[in-house]
Length: 298
Image (cartoon, rainbow, N blue to C red; front, side, top):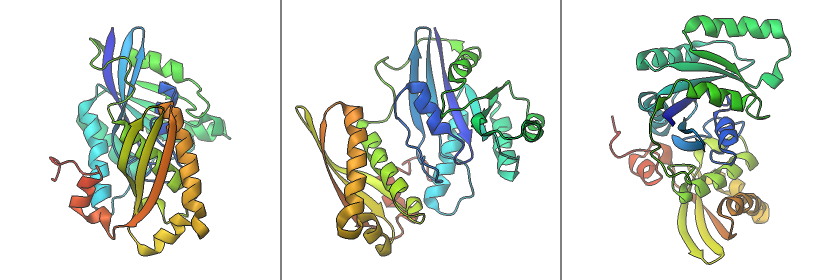
């Protein structure tokens, strides 16, 4: 039996969350074309007949601006220390830049073996230019494997699982085979709601919202959920609510659909919008919202 942990690391919007969802065959990590979508390190637990692999989906690496962003970058770097293998994700159209070089330097310092995972190969237009861009990444580090995939189209996902197993040690699984994550259900539900708010609102909204579950009750075949979408400016609240409440209603409809698929029950979902000005720089609120670990204030 093979067991091990694998960190998914890379810049924003390189498809790490889409990859982990394909591997698990369900929606664990939320996805969006906008940065700051993944904020917490989330463990996705993959099981098959001869292995258990714990994949850590991490926040995308980018320039930090506030206390929340700084903690997100710490979260991504911590994953390198926890893992037996690193998957470094890039897009097929990416050229290596300073951010890539900083990530690669962190990988070197971790002394953890790493794969270069080239995602979105379905978007390659000029193969000569693609191989020219790729060569710069190949020369930057001695990657154990280089794998080309399309996470969205499920292309070469099985192959990369096979390659990963070659670098894992024999060992007993530490999680029950019925589990697919280490996160509580309420966390996943809050993320589903945040995803819908991100994708349905204007560009300035996603960076500054989070979602908290105020009430969660299971009543037979019905789950009652009351949740709050938190924004950091008064001007954002009417955008999230929408004219006549249309936007918050649409967010609720789309989120409820995903939550019902997750829970396999009927869901009653009630959403509110609350303003907490400057919450991303307030340590006590970041702790309340699960975005700052109690023992990681350095």
